[in-house]
Amino acid sequence: MTTIAATPNRPWTKFYPVGIRATIDEAPYPSLAAMVRSIARTYASQPAFSLCLSNGMGGSLTFADIDRLSDAFALYLREQLQLKPGARVALQTPNALAFPIVAFGVFKAGCVLVNINPLYTADEMGKVFADAEPDCLVIIDMFADKLPTAFAIHKVRHVVICRITEFMPWLQGTIVGFVQKYKDKSVKPSPVAHTTFQTALTTGEARRGSVDVTAYSSDIGLETLACLQYTGGTTGVSKGAMLTHGNLIMNMAQSLEMVAGDIEKGKGTILTALPLYHIFAFTVNMLGFWYLGAHNILIPNPRPLTNLQKAFEKYPITAITGVNTLFNGLNNEAWFKDNPPKYLKTASAGGMALQEAVAKRWHEVTGTPVIEGYGLTESSPVLSFNPMGNVRLGTIGIPVPSTDIKCVDDEGREVPLGQPGELVAKGPQIMAGYWKKPEDTAKTIRDGWLYTGDIAIQDEDGFFKIVDRKKDMVLVSGFNVFPNEVEDTLAKNPAVLEVAVVGVPDGAAGEAVKAYIVKRPGTEITSEEVRAYCRLHLTAYKVPKFVEFRDELPKSNVGKILRKDLRAEELAKKLNG
Image (tube, rainbow, N blue to C red; front, side, top):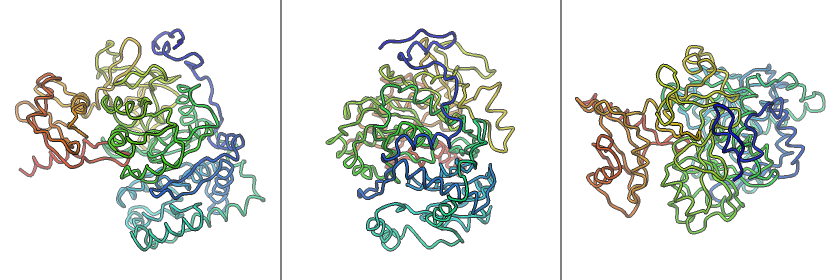
């Protein structure tokens, strides 16, 4: 690989392939609305988004369709609902064809999108409504029954209900709708007054001739707020990260710059199994692959993993994004191993640490590497990426263009190379702050640097390795133990399918290491064998003192293993004697 010379304080730039800019001087578009329109004109007749259910049924919309329909939704928001610029519009749906229409329509209306996890409980929904104060909510019909309880906390004035069957062929949509309503009873009558999504679009479309929809976004700039993206809450109370048009556009450009020359514009098919309301899929899959003119295959629910089989059979998938558990799961699916995707060129991992054993097995099965990156909701999200052609397993790669990263101690001083410290980052993708939480913002962003809460190590080439979450570190008799290291070691054991490691109270030692393990089907391993295996690869104080076998591990909606839930269980046990 040909490289370019490094710039001062950015040793990683020497690993940028020729043609990749170390600095992106200006945003490619003045707003997300402008980007949507420009790309739609370029790839008008090509398929942009397709829905694929577990049975292979679905629907498809072209770039021109999405552009026209999102215009209609923008008109509905501004003309029918009389929303003002900056008004919040909440969107609560799994991956479906309505998602990009609503998101792009909100941007075009000059409003602010509030992405909400559709799996939230009614109480969680109500708390987000109270914090974001949206004027309109677009929600999938399957979860509308939660609204009365959520509205008891905070009511949203206007409700639009969409369906998973939107834009499916009539017969397929009728069949799926019948099954949802009468067989599995996943859809119940809505208990609140609402407008249907199709009615909203029709109402907006009727105003097209009398109103210039492009005028709504004429005053939008890069500093204009585009999204309130609520953090997953895995380390505390969920907060709304304020992401601007500039944050999202620049991060899209930064991410795509790293793969310049490896993905041809106007071609390619991306499998989107991660939920679009999650920032990784939102920026990389929805915005990034729209910009590339690629075909996005939307999977509403990737669990069980057999739900993905029809998509791989039906479409020539060339790219996939996911988390470690998704790639690990596919590695162990017989249908996937026996017929690996023929057209796959790239796979990208984020959201949690990619285990080396999983990455190696993926390459064996598919013949393609998993390229690990790193980011947070607060950074739109991508901060670093393994450069194509120079992937280093076990690292999160190097900073994307126009991004600085360093590791610091508790006083904010940069630590020596090779020493662990908190990873802090600076760049155009860093959020404007937390919504209505100036004190939290001041703690997280200091002198322009985002303090991530992750412990990392930088090597002399500028590649970074995440050691662990600062809050997940286990303190054993004064020694720091990072769960990621123990998990990565255990993941290499052929009897281990999934593993999570946490610290548990342990008298004079302070804490002890505990491993929760899901065994690989057809294998057996004992607690003592687990410890013996670890003793071969780890210093004594890192070896799990306790081992518990489980049928499954708690996971978030995107498949992250939730250590916090396991720690909470241990704390409850201690409190209950």
